[in-house]
Image 1 (spheres, rainbow over the protein chains, first blue to last red):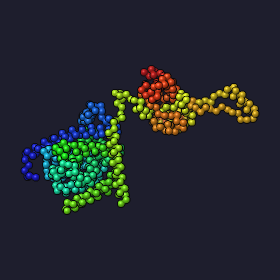
Image 2: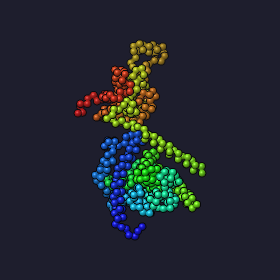
Image 3: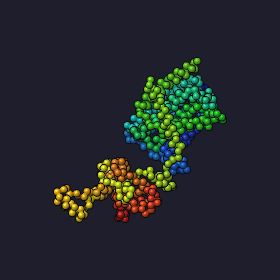
Length: 324
Length: 202
Ligand code: SF4
Ligand code: SF4
């Protein structure tokens, strides 16, 4: 990067951050609605239905309710950690969107180490969950936080291995360059070359974003709500938004790495990128309403005994082929 | 090694699961938007309402029940109370026959108590609709009702004299034999017998 950071580029990044915040907020509403509709349709219910036509305003009403609620802190909770956690969960996520190339023109900050930036800042999320669980002074919160840490640390490794395989293959950590290395047709995407890496990445992403069937940190039936048991109002809202934002980031990175990013069979552009991201998000919802939650030992078994060895083998094979 | 292959083969079940939920996703919903849409008798038939007695085929006003008391002991919440019908007083002829039999030194043939319930009460306010009674009844005399409109404002409204209810239902069915087939789900619930004096509460 240049040593002198011009005023223009700073302005660009700030504008991008504002845009990302709007994007995340709107998508939070949209995804909550979509999630509940998907759940409803899979169970042959209508889902949200009463607020607005087809319940389209339900998410807005819920958001207003969350904003309007009183913020309550448990008596013995640590005030600093307790309030820091939701902030720490939400704001770093916004940074994750910066290097993502929505289209050739629509990129917040095209850094050549974009992938590294995302992986590094994604680590904040687990810290936030840990602080939330610890600061709440609640046993369910603490258990949820402990699970979150064990899970995130474990699933980060196969995730990295899958990402590395692509980075080896493309020889770059810049997301735009990775998209540039793929073609428009589905068989020119990296998923055709690296199907195993894609599978490992997607499963690990589910684990990283605490999505069902790996939603143990907030397992409702065992831990009431896990790490965010004590949060109400916008404290809870921030965690919620952060969770959905993390899902979007995971799906975006997946799209960039494996599905050709903004490239499509015709008319390349941001619409292809968004279509693929929403497709992946819908798949995540589909998973959630299909699979039961795994036990914690199963979760770790899956990671250490399957994903990790497979990821290592895949990486070695990739390195070997690239050397040839 | 074998276990690895078995695990990989078992992965197929994940795809099967996705297929099932995917198929259900595409089917139309089954929810009835009640106040806006009418509940069809077919939809109401899937409703497991308070249990009711089932009548004999030839005399629908009389329950199939043989007063075996199995349901009383099977019910985990003690909702059901059944008493046997009283033994009928012997007629003068029977009395005479008994006396003659005794005179001959034989055992007199006393009239046996009838295999039918005298009272059959059910407290819906205790019932968890577990279905144990439905399952245990040896003559299939108990079933779930499909009355989705039942309401009450007092606890006593939910204590049913099932014999009276059955008789009332049979009479109603006789009155309009055509329409009665699907449980008359859209008809308002018959007033529970215990709510004879609803005004006293008001
Ligand atoms: S359904 Fe269960 S709880 Fe209700 S009366 Fe029958 S046995 Fe008792
Ligand atoms: S189990 Fe059936 S036959 Fe026996 S008392 Fe109950 S209803 Fe009557």
